[in-house]
Length: 218
Image (tube, helix red, strand yellow):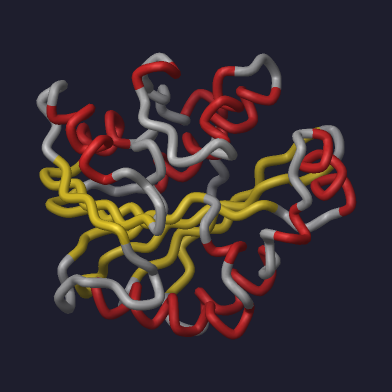
């Protein structure tokens, strides 16, 4: 399968930092605006958006501040979002003022409040690594349930490595307290429910740091 080229990645459309509603004091939103680090954070989102095929309805699990919504609005008729902690009314109002209607809820990927076969795409950016390996099966089972036939799931997860542990620690995070599943465990679980289309890695001089998976519900 042909790999993505830099010029093939979409432009990430996003607002100024002060226009977003932060989820909590540890919200990584600020990193997107930093030099160097910001380029890596933005590129991983671009890689995920490149895999999104467009259609009627998209669900982003863990939408946070809604960083992807401007791009998703270009691809889908309806944007749904599910997040454990995001201030849903505040985030929805920010985009409503810009002519983008969203349907946002608080909740978990382990038990989603949607009917069967409802979405064309389910998108999860830096969410699945926070689940324990035994929870991945339940998460992908729910994702398969809410996806239409031939619908797609697109996810992004950090690559487990000593460099990544060090890099997050430099940013003030101990990922051992928050990341419970590796990219290999996520990939294995996804492949047990869906047909693989493509898995891409974001590489740096220190090696792969992020992995994007694209699978289809056959």
